[in-house]
Amino acid sequence: MKIQFLGTAGGRFGVSKQIRASGGIYIETCGKKLYLDPGPGALVHARRNNIPLEELDAILLSHVHQDHTNDANVLIDVLTKGGWKKKGTLIGSRTAIEGYEKIEKAVLEHYLKFLEKIVVMEPGDTFNLGDLKITATPTKHGDPKGIGFVLKGEKTVSYVSDSYYFEGLEDYHKGSDIMILNHIFPREESTAEKKNNCHTDTYSAKKLIERTNPELVITQHFGITMMKIGPDNEAKWLEEETGVKVVAAKDFQVFEF
Ligand SMILES: [Zn+2]
Image 1 (cartoon, rainbow, N blue to C red):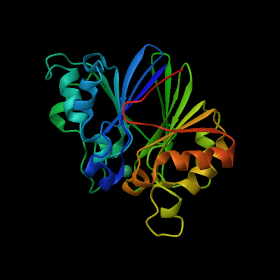
Image 2: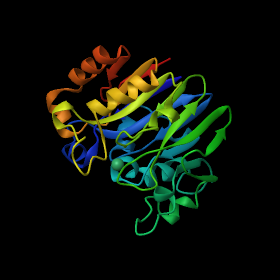
Image 3: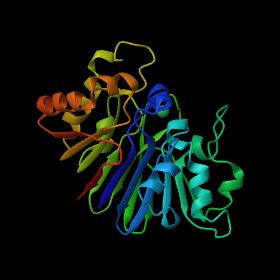
Image 4: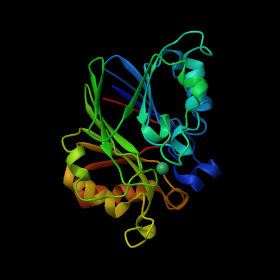
């Protein structure tokens, strides 16, 4: 199994500066090639890292926000050779694929038609892509229909996506080997007391790690303050506090299991 980070920036300010890239995550598992949350720069950084975009089996979109979906249309265009070859599966939140209430969808109708299969997921739904079992998990975030994913294949990988911690979140991610956390805020920017606490900060990451106890946590999707103070410091603190191995991903880093 292979996981490569085509960028580790997150949030509107983290992405706008491009100090770190924001191209999402490429995963190979169970003989399948997946692209998860292709934010701005996914096409550019995928090409520079020789990601086989024409061979993708699925594109996964956790929610509608730009830093997760910006390059979805162009990836579909590349995968299907501009629609000449109908192929690929798009899996994602209702907001990203269909839109919801006043939220406009992220993938244009023009590109949706190029796909072989479209799977809209709600928390708890499952979908099998060959031997890979994909389960949608709940989030609490600015997108009311946003989801995370558990990918159960050679290893079980939890992608919590953008969410603040809430009671019961751990129930969906227990038993995972690897947990990918979108770690926007460091301790000094803790959002626990704030009204719009819609992202994971270090304290809520600690709670989730303690309650799920994975073998490895990979943090990414860092906000601008997090980048400045250094995600490694927060990862080290989390590791010391929880006893679970925590690694802050670097741009283009590859993990092989
Ligand atoms: Zn978001």
